[in-house]
Image (tube, rainbow, N blue to C red; front, side):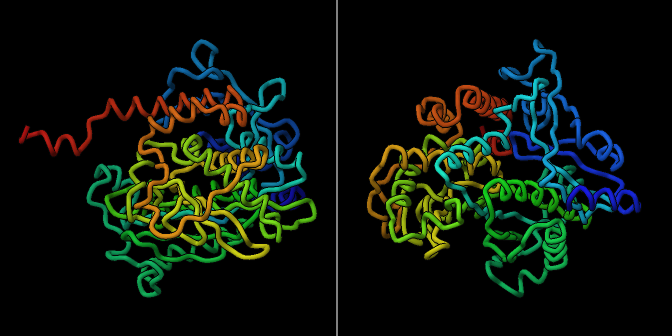
Amino acid sequence: MNLDELRADASADRTDTVLLVLTDMQGRLQGKRMTARHFLDEVVEHGAEACNYLLAVDVDMNTVEGYEMSSWERGYGDFEMRPDLSTLRRVPWHEGTALCLADIAWADHQPVVASPRQILRRQIERLAERGWEAFAGTELEFMVFEDSYEKAWDDGYRNLTPANRYNVDYSMLGTARVEPLLRRIRNAMMDAEMRVENSKGECNFGQHEINFRYDSALRTADDHVIYKNGAKEIAAQEGKSITFMAKYDEREGNSCHVHLSLRDRDGTSLFGSNDAGLLERFIAGLLATLRDLTLFLAPNVNSYKRFAVGSFAPTAVAWGLDNRTCALRVVGHGASRRVECRLAGADVNPYLAIAALIAGGLHGVDKELALEPAFEGNAYLSDKPRVPSTLREAAELFGSSDVVRDAFGEEVVGHYLNNAHVELEAFEAAVTDWERFRGFERL
């Protein structure tokens, strides 16, 4: 949807609402519902304001200490939401509604460097300095439950009914049970200008995946956050619920495999050429930095429960050729040759994940790192370095890494370290069902 189409729709009363949204640290859409007329008359040219605490709160939207950009001492002022009109599109699951993503800036129009979209933009700029462009795809898994979000909340998210009672990985029979919902999501995303390729069943009960066409890195991240939000909204309209938790239960977790490749200015794949040197150095950089960058790929306490032996989630920092036991898997041939990072879960912020992979790969390119041989066999049982096993370990590696600081800068590092510490403090203060069940009577 372009601006002229929005004007025509608004004049004909086909579109009356525009959602102006930003992406927060957790990868969620936050923003305002505007009348289409106000958006066209005022916001397109001048932008809009939002409280800068949107990048300084926890998951529950509580104000927390430790952020330089936003605090009680600084008065919790505003930043500007500047609409990126290239992202303007219709929202088919809401009547008469369009959506536009915003970049955020301070009052002097300088970008908010710790905002997720800006973090990815900076890494894209580093590639552009070399004449390169990143293309990416994210494979986002989720679990569908027959319970509404309200019922799930009231029940404490316990004893929910999965949409499938058994493993429906690739099953046509099993996925047909959920097809009314999945078909609606697929078609709605197509109507919202995303290119859906397919949906398929996964291993856990009620677990599914919808895949989209590979695209430029920023477009992929934008589509990812809109799709994730939209899928939840559509499920709610159908009286069902969807979770993108990395690890909902003790069975298989929800992954977000991130595929990445580079192209030059004329669109030629740099990973598909006969000269494999660039791809090898890029993978070597990822191997050297993956532990340091895990915080951007696994941002929550729950993220780390997904890393389990034999679960199709990686535990070893290794690379292989079409080897799903490794954290990094090289797939495709010729122009489609790419790196798949299997570390991220579905709770990931895609802007941060893709930015991390670009930064790690560029480290290998700039330092001309040599690539070790591809791992063959079961990497779960190897002596390769281990993926961090806790959020605390990942935060310590992130905060002490010179590579991370060189790639992202002190402001970004400090901001996301504080986010990790806030998450850890909240978790460590909580009393869990596991503790009550284990200790109420028997301890």
